Length: 158
Image (cartoon, rainbow, N blue to C red; front, side, top):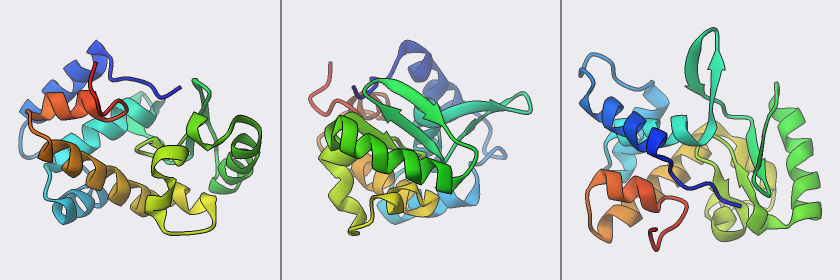
């Protein structure tokens, strides 16, 4: 169910990592990345790959994104995404549901939100904090940031 990083995603990561310093990711990404001691460009690249959507002709991460059993869904509001999340968890099970900007899997990592309300995973700041912490943990296993991005949904690699 969890999407692996594609060649296009790796190319996007390479592009963002080599882009000019003047093109920093939005502040929320910088804050979450700083707290986890990872490059904000890596966190932003992962979010683009995981939840990116075209908005006014530009690819942007979308906070109200769910992936349920391999199918992506984007919602206009947090409330709509929350309703769909509750249904998806009941019907598909938590290990088949990825949530938010970082597409955090609710079965494997939902406990990281430290909340009994699964919709808290849709909070963009909390979601980025969890995604950044996961990336930091994967980096501690070794390898460069491309390898880390490749492990994001499949920690064993491959």
